[in-house]
Amino acid sequence: MPMNKNTVLAWATTIMVIVGLGLIALGAFRYDDVAGWGFAAVGVGFFAIAWVFDALKGRV
Image 1 (cartoon, helix red, strand yellow):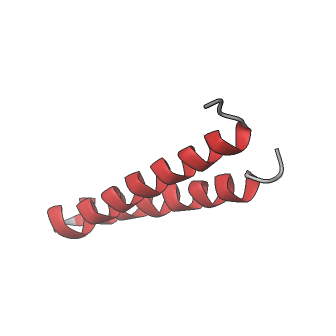
Image 2: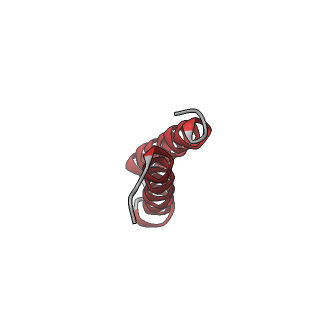
Image 3: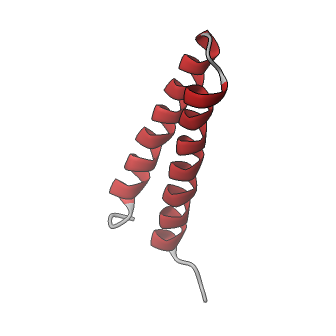
């Protein structure tokens, strides 16, 4: 199956959402101190980048 640009962006969006959820889960459940806030903030950043990838899916 050949992968075009939209398929690559869809996979990148899916992977970034999974990594973002993992980082937020690390911040919420693993680290109780200030480091947890950093993990959660980076996870939200991954969601923002995944949102941009999803918005670009039909335009490239």
